[in-house]
Amino acid sequence: MGVWYWVETKVATAYREQQELEVAPKASSIYPDYAILMLGEERELQKKLGLWDRFQTADGFFPSLARFAISGSIVGAALFFSATIGR
Image (cartoon, rainbow, N blue to C red; front, side, top):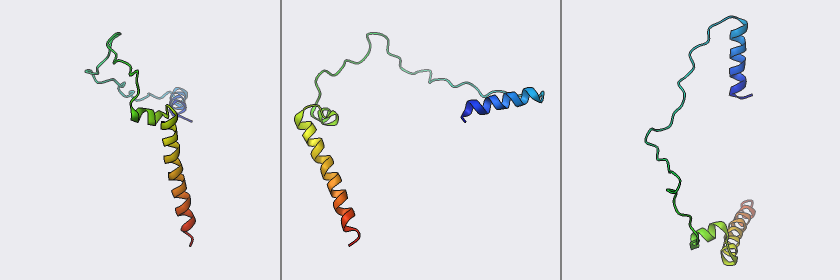
């Protein structure tokens, strides 16, 4: 039950009971100085990834291995500390 249901219910009730509806709120608009890029003005695509970009996307064997090692150490530390809490 979203906003549309609420609006439709309000309009249907006003129609059945012959009531006036309040004025609708002003429509939203964008900032007038919003920069719009025309065709050909787009930024150039990055064709070669840097070390941090390769790590984030796990692009390649060593970045994938690094992500696996880091995530494994985080999970291992969480398991270790959660196991020692009850002692």
